[in-house]
Length: 358
Image (cartoon, rainbow, N blue to C red; front, side, top):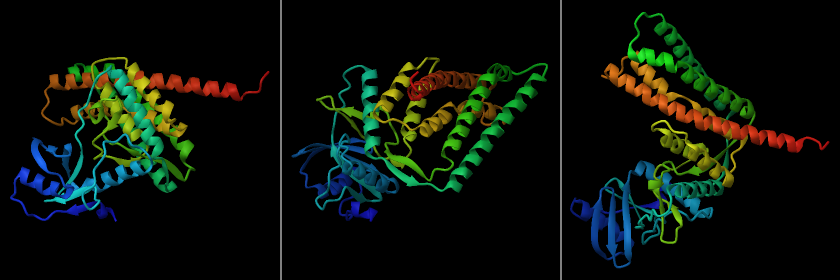
């Protein structure tokens, strides 16, 4: 059934990029005037307007097309449309590449950056809300995932505790070891917080037989959210889309936004709650997201790589890397604590509303 979406083109043209492009475009009844090459994307000037022809791997293409079709069917139209070929297919298979055609839309990045972020998160929330689907989950699989993850995280806590003792026993510590001793408490507290939230999530969900999923974009960024001349925002590049819990879209974007010099990213909190305003997260979804967001994986990797002497980094390189990961950890900590504060306020307000009037 998935292959009903694609059509294979006969190898009738010489093997060069423009010949391949023309061979594919024969399936769209376009009279080509000019082609501009942008790597995997070709800009097509034709008698019917300007289009973009993009090539992707067939291994990801089928899921991508299916997910886009699901969104169309659910009534979500803020996706740059994919045009059908003459025989009604949404992609063309040619020389082991999958091609799809869409309009060429120049992004008009007018307006403040924060406004565009909020618009993007609002559209993301709307896309998720229209594609909700509950799927059954095996309780034993959930428990096995929980046990594996918890065991791995607790082992990392043991590693931190053992290395801090080892470092403090030395008369002369290296600069990286000394820096780790300064940062140990923050890394350890982040890991403990992550474990605590993970345990709370499991306690809430261990008896549930279903989990809420959505069609995720897979690579949310302002580069993949374009605006037309009317100010409407559209998502492009759904090639990494998948059916997954909503945090699969939210977390990577927030994490990338905080990988910078030390900042208090109030914008990150605003973007998240702008999303939640249009697509409220369930309590267990929020717990899991808090756990994954707080998890200090990058800092742990920096420490382990130094201890195990992975790579050819000098002492100076290791110090710089640990410093960068500590900045990131503190940026995340600020956002996590803001979320914790807001969620506690919401719980207190809900409890107050439920209490009987005196």
